[in-house]
Image (cartoon, rainbow over all chains, first blue to last red; front, top):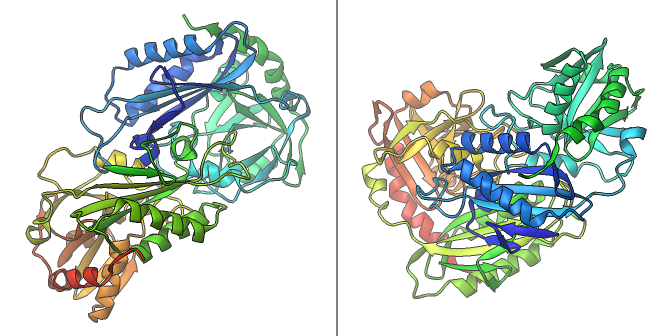
Amino acid sequence: MQVLVNGQAQTQIAVHDRGLAYGDGVFETIAVIGTHVQFWAPHWQRLESGLKRLGFHCDTQQLKQLIESDMRTLLAPSNGPGVLKITVTRGQGGRGYLPPEDVLPNRIVQLTSWPEGREHLSGTGVSLCLCKQRWSANQSLAGLKHLNRLDQVLARQEWHSEAYHEGIMLNQQGNVQSAVMSNVFIEVHGQLLTPINDTAGINGIMAAQVMQLASHLGISLQQQKIKLSQLESADGVFLTNSLNGIWPVVKFAQLDYAIGPITQRLLAALPAHIDAHSQPIS
Amino acid sequence: MQVLVNGQAQTQIAVHDRGLAYGDGVFETIAVIGTHVQFWAPHWQRLESGLKRLGFHCDTQQLKQLIESDMRTLLAPSNGPGVLKITVTRGQGGRGYLPPEDVLPNRIVQLTSWPEGREHLSGTGVSLCLCKQRWSANQSLAGLKHLNRLDQVLARQEWHSEAYHEGIMLNQQGNVQSAVMSNVFIEVHGQLLTPINDTAGINGIMAAQVMQLASHLGISLQQQKIKLSQLESADGVFLTNSLNGIWPVVKFAQLDYAIGPITQRLLAALPAHIDAHSQPIS
């Protein structure tokens, strides 16, 4: 693994960093192959939008250039597939919750190895459990990929069996919000439905790309509240995630699913879409 | 400032620490004078309870001994008042949200200077604004002093005027939950009311001590839902916090309050109660 903290090769950060103290920051997890970065533009847009929603005062254009410089340092053409994680915290200090006026964000850019052994799952499909842990509700944080992720940490601890690849998480209303590390889509009567992230959830980059792809393919799609019963009776279910792409769901608790026709169309079209949006950092 | 990370004098922590990545940890902020630590037993109990609720696998008795050893290293009889902050994170690593099975917690013990210039506020009283930012709702995290504190960071950014000392935060139902860094109590018809932390809030150590003190003094107290209108029409309002003790509220937005009779009794009794629970670490 290779890590740059504010452009310097180091693996530590100050204990007074507000990312540690309060989870005061955002992150992105991005698939890379060699120097090719998948969906960098939308990843950056989400990161920047997160900084704005959290009230970070910084020159985001300069930050983008610095992150891209870090990426050029870490990525090499001879590298295989890898995972780039970008974390931006508000920076150090402040007595209590109020950030210092002159605080400058800290950026951490890490390149880690590709998680092996998952590739077949887009063909075979995955099995899901239902997590007891629900999403915290708060529209001011909904959609953001911020560093307050205890909901997911608690949910992910609910299963240790390799029989399950992912877990469905409900929101406070008891509706389906997502899986622990993925967005969820269901097929109902030839239409694609995915939860709305109005009080919880993360606006997934791969989810947005799959929605765009569905639109190109003329597949009708709605973002709306999804009841657990709708998930259970769906004609097809799949998950999306920036590293895993599309994972068809073949099992949820005691229910078996076929891989739905829309899921199959999207699975077939996704690799070319990813290739078209996979570019070296300019 | 002095900092020990796992007992070693250092000021940095690994970027792979789960406290930074996910806010996967808890903290305590404790008033100290010289080697005397205020309310260490209840602070430790809350910390330990937080570790259990988050599913940390560690020998908490050993952890307590290590933290107490850190405290003996940092605290000196010749020191004046100070603030001890104890942070325990789940430790390093894990691919994604699942903690590694063999993960060991990291502890950070910091001693910082006492925040000067606040002492008079327990006499003069404080002014509050109403924050737009609400508490996230989730019973699994309610009451815990965990590291997912974006609600408070966002709320605290809402005012910069020194005319306000604190801000009231509502929960998702629109009821009064707390102030940004304090618990809140109101006097209504000779009774003390304080919000129940069932879906949000932090179980404050000073709040619990004040409840105990009220019980000793024969003051009736209820933990219940509190409407904004009840706060607005209260006969007295005060805040509690481990560093500030009791802060009577004299102003909330456009409303003025007298310092209520129960508040006055508790203010008078608190110093002796604090002294009785302020002991050197054994």
